[in-house]
Length: 159
Image (cartoon, rainbow, N blue to C red):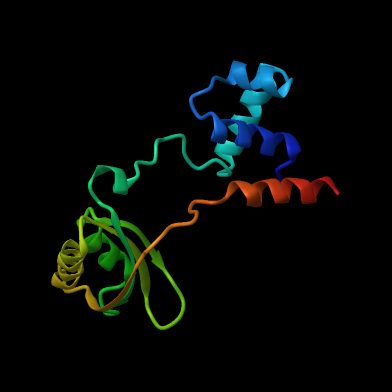
């Protein structure tokens, strides 16, 4: 889907002020309310805006340890069955099928390092994961950083 400068400004506005109204956005951006709403609808329907829901931060409700874990799975079961089994573990907050030496990459939230071990053991206990290798995040500098990419794409399409 093509995005332009106004699309990027609308997304930036709601990123910076997520609880603002469409009317407020139209006033600040100096465009008609219907324009803002139709652009939001188009970007939502087109998948550019994937969600309007809050994104809770696990570190603020008791899960300060974050780890990335590469998983080697039981190939006989297939990815869907493995992911279905792993979805039962709430500490697994992301799972991606990846290329390379592992099959899946997971992001895990845990209460402590021993709790991380419990989560890793729970994954192995599903009998869908054969091996795991994890790294613990020491500091997060940024995450979910898609707005600069959207803005750069909007600027590129202006040329």
